Amino acid sequence: MEGTHYNLVIYGGNPAGLACAVRTAREGLTVLLVNHTPHIGGLPANGMGLWDTLYEGWRSPIYNEMRQAIFDHYRNTYGKDSPQYAACLPGKTGHSNGKYEARVFEQLSEKMIQAESNITLIKSHYPTDIEQADRLITAITFTEMNRDASFRATGDIFVDTSYEGDLLPLANVAFRVGRESKDEFNEPHAGRIFMRFTKALPESEQHMADIVASLNLRQFGGAMETIMPDSTGEGDGVVQAMNFRTALSSDPNNQVKPEPPEDYDPARIKTLLQSLEVNRPDRGQDGGQFPNNKSDWNRPQLIEGATDYVHGDWPTRQRILKDFWNIVIGILYFFQNDPDAPENMREAFAQWGLAKDEFPDNNHMPWEIYVREARRLEGRYMLTEHDVRLAEGIDRAPIHSDTIAICEWYTDVHACHPERVKDSRDEGKVMLHKQTVPGQIPYRSLLANELDNFLVPVCLSASHLGQSAIRLEPTWMQIAESAGYAAVQAIKNKQTPADIDIDQLQQTLAEQNSMLTFFNDIDLNDDYAHNAAIQWAGTKGFFDTYDARPQDKLDQHTAHRWINGFVQLCGEKLDTKTLAHLTRGEACQILYYSYFQQQ
Image (cartoon, rainbow, N blue to C red):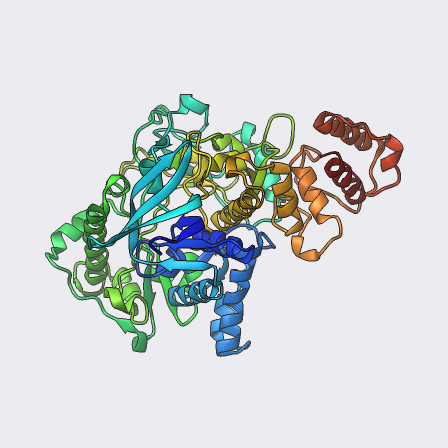
């Protein structure tokens, strides 16, 4: 540890940090992975018991591996006909691409890390100082949580995968906290906004809604419209709500009934419930049916204290977490015991208690809160709401030639203020189920302008709205694994991550079956011979819809367009006859090989 030089120093032991560390270690790099709590796994190991993704298929290697490991765990532990295995599998509807218990996710995370001899894992430490020279980070000092002990780590490349983006201020790079105004990037839903659910979208949005409905993604009902003139679009420094994903159990043998917390005041709880959104545990994500009779209670939400958490030091954050946990426990206790609680809520909460086998060393309180948004890098490309909406002239989102991952979640922002007008939701709440399309994540959004050996896959360069469609664990895992491949390439070629050849990186990612372009009719798990070529072609503008149609014969018009596009791409002209009588997939393969032969 102290005195050891690492190829890669990663701060943040969540799934993104795990993906980056494991990928780089498997490729031969030495890795230091540091986490601020005594437990790794991030939110999935702290109560969030499902994968939030609309896409069901193959995405990227480490994500796919972890997802399969969860399925294997429940099948091997309980049997293929067990209720536990059935509960872990993806549901037919809803948010879930598979469910799991927090303790299981942590166990599998530990197993994955321990299998890699190139990884050194340090827990319960956070960064307190960064040293720099000549546009490079050279060392980070990490301090032990709640103690004065510290150590200094040197490395070639440094990666911030923390939810809070805690390396950003220490590294003196530009970053943002809070919301942009509507005017800054001309984002339709930026800034101060009140929205309500509606059955009819405006005509200008209907074409996008039709495309969303046609995609091979999980579909959600409901659309939202903006309430004017109350929605002024003004920016501010406020982030969206946070909350614990409290692990509850309905098994009487595996639950701890909450006791009234310190300073419990039922009158205060009643007042809080007037502004806090609280759902029933049995009506959580997909009805709360998790393995071993558990639920991840996704409420109540911390709205006004969320921004203080982002800016706070760790003693301040710990105080905020403890105060909010007392509110969570107070609400649970109130609904289970207070005669003033509505009867239907008393009945719903009566069967639930804190899961006894989750977080036993922290009095069953999760070690981390759900940080949906914190600091955001202001880097070499700023992702905005426009990157997950239809681009002008094509029926897909804007195409980025340096894309390294995809996002497919809808623009999803939780409340920023506990304020409503008319029939609106809380101020700042934006859920664009029908107005968001799959986007591409450019490599530039991971790079700070001020440094060349620093990668930020989680708190990457994005607006408040742009980040809201990215902030899911599967997406972060893919971005971070791609960052790992970039680090490997940089070390191998004796470069910084900012200097690498993006074509070489994309070729590696495509051939490793990491999705660079979402297509409605491509599953990378099918082992189709032309998958890598099609993925690459999707980053260079050869497709203007979400349908690749790889088995269709290439028509003459498309052949001419693709040949002209190839000339613009690399200055080399191919004979149109080269693509004659080929399928679209075969044509992509010709273009792919021809392109890399020119490089």
